[in-house]
Image 1 (cartoon, rainbow, N blue to C red):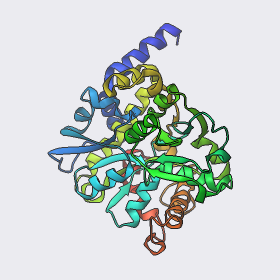
Image 2: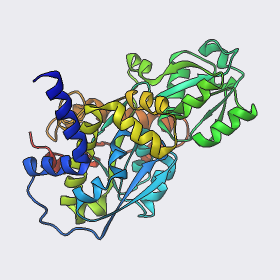
Image 3: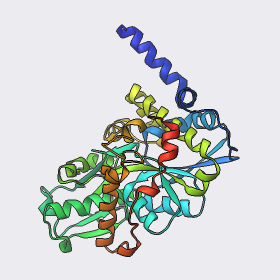
Image 4: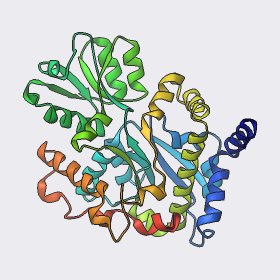
Length: 347
């Protein structure tokens, strides 16, 4: 294919929108829906831009699901758990650490893979005068409570042998963190993009990105979740939703800048910050996720790396007092809906 032909193909792909591509995927890999459709599907979404949400702005999810869609925003994983518990959302994609907390508290949810692996999208940003991680001792650090950033911050403190007792953690949402930074109430923050873009522009500098923790066996990611009751009642809608998410991520991969511009415009964020945030996540396909590098399949799940990492996150939450050790399930394997994942993406 020539360069011009490739450009034309890419434009046609983008013009389809996520809904059109999702329909094509569904036609290849799963039969038409045979179970009832819900009157409305409520999708929880972070207040920060994410690649898979690009279809929110052109009706792609409505086309893919064949029903009304409502979007409900949340600032971090903790509020997402509240929305799920109240049955105010059916689907969401957010951090593995709060998801583990929800599971330990018997929230009836199921995991549907990990479409976003955190690399550089979450960063530890500090003010001038803090040159090393050791300099964080005696300082005030803001971090969203029960978040992947909180997990990464504690891991960084442990790995680098810092005196955690000398570091004051302030549990703030990310928008509140921006305000606290400007008031001079904090010295550093572990924060998600595109929020860190504003802090870098205001004189902050980067001390760490979450990807650097992987060499010490610490992984953070964003999992897709569904309410168990919804999955039982509408399994074909779950399959269609998974196809739609995959299609939108493929749309992003086809032209990252074009998707970043759409999201920047709709989220009211600087293009460069959105572009860099999206590039700071890794996007394994759902087929890849069902391989040995991530979740494995139902037969090999107990040895899968991300199943083990869920256990590590649970231990972290127990060590910090956020969970009782006896609330942690013996195995996280039953919480992953391998059956619907395989129905959506056969081997």
